[in-house]
Image (cartoon, rainbow, N blue to C red; front, side, top):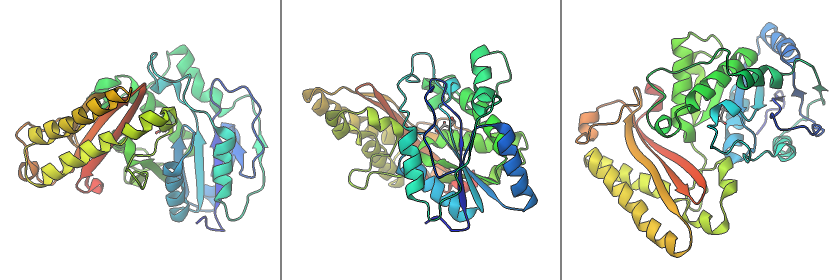
Length: 340
Ligand code: PAF
């Protein structure tokens, strides 16, 4: 529940392609860095903590669980919406990424106990422009996570983490949150951002104030909630939980002491079986990768590694699966993520 003393602020970053006027909202919408900074200074002066939930919009229950955690743990909460072009490769789905701002605002408003004063201000130096500029010219400062961004998701999406690290650095510098909240579904992103704050000595948030919130799943079949699930046809949706089932298989083999190689090959076999059934139903299921990685270095575990050899460092079991034209990702972490 939203605490009555808590105001939820939406810090809105207009998407590059969005030219329509913003819908009215009882939640304050801030679109300029200057107006935000004023608001933030007041919070600093009043010693109020600020929780931050960065998003690309198309909100679902997974995002709302982050908002709720932030509301419970902070005096004030900021949510940002910005579809970040820098994290999409040219062949990816930037143009079609769901943009559902009126519904996003409705979802946030519906949860609010006491509505805030409506606040909206336009400015020439809006955050959207400040964020978008570097992505048009491609010449300004970028943040790169050397040696970390090329495994797991980075192997399939080589420019993804540079785009995420850059925009989140800008967001953190603008928002200056006390705490930031990320979903476990994007585990590599969350751990990299924690690392970014640690390596570059971010004061807001400090690395151990970057929180990872468990993945929200469909209660019936375990599918991880994702804005991209909206792309799935009814037929494709039936096969979407396959990746989670394969990861669960690997998790149970791992806890039974099987080698990493056997865990991964067993998980791949789960997918191969469904692939054949899906093909009969006219749906293409195609594995991108399933792997087991060290959560500190993201290095792939040795083929013969097993739960005893891996020791105390949490292990990430993760994968990406194409269902039709939709790329789904998911993961299970074995061990305590707060150790990373
Ligand atoms: O997870 C997301 O929605 C995005 O990668 C993020 C963190 C908002 C950066 O654009």
